Every structure is written in structure tokens, then in C-alpha cells.
Length: 123
Image (cartoon, rainbow, N blue to C red):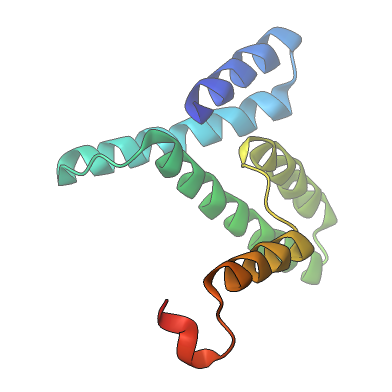
């Protein structure tokens, strides 16, 4: 589970004395805990890895936006801190398919179904 991996990384960072990495993993764990509490009140119980991945993707998107704003504002030291956090967050995200791999999978599905035109989209 991704949650366990993040927790193990947090413990390893604390033992190594890496304050930046410890702070980033604590931030991740705090967001996950917030999402747990939010879902507990709603009564929904989605797959744990899917929920953690969703939280990590949102955090990564926020960091990317912050980096853009800091760099456009000339605050390179804050942008560097956000880049460090983003790199830690991305370590725990599942690997994304490249554009070529995605196109190859789509072409394989199209040939498997015999889809030639837009009329075949429903299949």
C-alpha cells in the first residue's frame, strides 16, 4: 500500500536527519489523514491506494502551480523548496504511461475491436 510506503519513508527520513524530506512526508501523511476524516464523515470507503493516489496527484498539481507562480514572481528560493517537495511527492505516485505507450495501447484496442471510424466509438 502506498500509505505504508510513505510512512516508511517518513521514518527513514527522520532517522537520517533529513529535515526537508521529513517535512514533505509529514505533509503527505497529514493530507492523507485529512482525507480519511473527510471520507469517514461521508460514509464512503474507496480503495485506499486510489484515495492516496488522488491525494498525491492533487498535492503535485498544487506544487506545480506554486512553482510557476514563484518563478514568475522572482522567488527562486521558494520555488526550489516547492520543487523539492514535488520530487518527494512524485516518488510515491505510480508511474505514468508515456504518450507512445498510450497510443500503442489505444491502437491495440482499436484493432482488437475492429473499430475503423467514429461510428464504432460506442463499442
